Amino acid sequence: MRRKLSFYNKLLIFFVLVGVIPLLIIGSMTYGFSKRFFLEQYRQQLHDKVAGAAERFDALAEEYGGIMNTIGELPEVRQALLGGNAELKKNVEQRMHLLLAGKKNKAAIYLINADGSARYSTRELPSIYNPVKYRGWGIFRTAHEAEGEIRAYPHAYESLQGDKVVLSLVQTVHSASGELLGYLIVDFPRSLIADIVSAYDAPFAMDFVVLDGHAYTVIHTKQPEREGTLERDPAEIGSGDLLQVVASKKLGLSVYGYSPGAIVEQSMGFIQTLFAVAAAVSFVICLWCAYKLSKYVSKPIFELAHSMKRISMGDLAVRIESRRVDEFGIVASGFNAMATQIKDLIASAKDEQRRLRIAEIKALQAQLNPHFIYNTLDLIKWNAKMNQTKEIGGIVVQLARLLRGMIHMDDEETTLGAEMELIEHYLYIQRIRFADRLSMEIRIDEEALDATIPRLLLHPLVENAIVHGFENKVGNVDLSIVCRRSGDELEVEIKDNGIGMSEETLAAIRGGTHQGGIGINNVHNRIRLYYGEAYGLDIDSESGIGTRVSLRIPYRRKEEIA
Image (cartoon, rainbow, N blue to C red):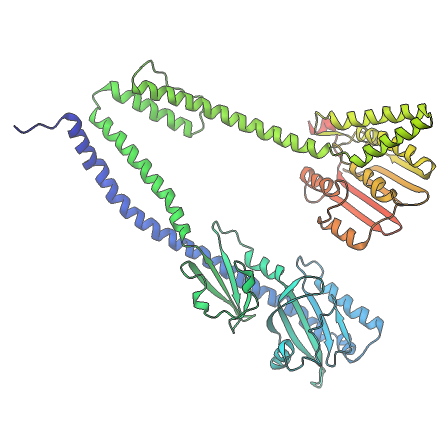
């Protein structure tokens, strides 16, 4: 006797026929269409980024080509190539620097006469630019082939400043009668070329290769070791990946941009997840249709789906009220526990982020030079040996106040008056250390005392003047602190007559690459973080003369902030 199908089996067959099979058919078609669509989108985005890089190369050629034409047409330049004095050399090089002013990544410009005896440049001339020795080779050969036109010349060498040069522009300079006067060369460092090809915001990984007309590799972002070599088979670049090639007409370069083809498969993961969710929803709908007359089953499913929707919309207070002890009751309890846990986790994450931010600021504010602590304790020791109890008492009191002021910080901001009080504790100890050698001048406008500033904004600057300016200086030392209100801004100037610093050190500090000092970069970054990019530190220094540090921030009082 043939066994009849149970209701469960009938429901399962119905689910497969009505839910899964159409879903598989439609899903397969949609997946194929989506893959093709995403692939075309990726190719278009890739082409746009590569075309953008090629356009930036053309813009670079147009920009520096205009500079070269301007230089070449100057009468004083032609006079300088025929031979000039030091004043003429200075004027020519000043014009070069003025033409480069305001450019983020500056190229180097060299002007050389035909026999190499007169040289004008924005940087020290490399030895490879010798028109007598290499007249028929390399960049000079390219210049003669162009006869007055600007040509690109890819090559690779390390400049005297340590930059790797990968591309140059060259042009011959002639007199009015057509006589060769010299050569004008512009060198582009690798960093500038890398910025051109990498200045994109594509949502996927990309690599670039730039070749000239002879397949010479100008730059290779994925394999830099291949730069300066010939690409044997340019057609093999980005093999197996998404590839786009766009030419830079003005420089005669080809820009290759490619991205792994696997990114499309990764993007398909979202579609696959969507199909899985759709299949699950279809399964639930099928069960609901099968048991639509049974309120016992349909109601908890509806409540669960409704509650999940509210959760997805951000309503974390939603809960399912159920007294059932079966599987639906377990699901409801699990959902309620999940909603509670999500709410607690979100609150905990927000609180943790807030505490972490405060902890980072306090860690930055709590920097105190251990060398200062050691010197203070050593000062106490020597005063104790000399029975200077009064000085010891004063030092200990001021050190305690200083440490208490730097450790107990509940607010991120303070007033200028409170900050100066902390500095006074520090300077009291330093006055005893330096005895009669240290003289100070502190001038603060009365209305500036209640200005609100970030905590420990000025203390690192004062400590820098003492530690780096005075420690190794012989003779009397002077420190000046001036704070004043200027309209809607607060201006502070800290000046010393210490040992100062070299131009290299000053340039490194201004560029944010100097590793020494006591929080100079931190103070500068904190000012910009609090008040924006328009504000920050201004540092002037001369070796053996002294240092001046000034800052400018908005003038605000606590009641105005509130």
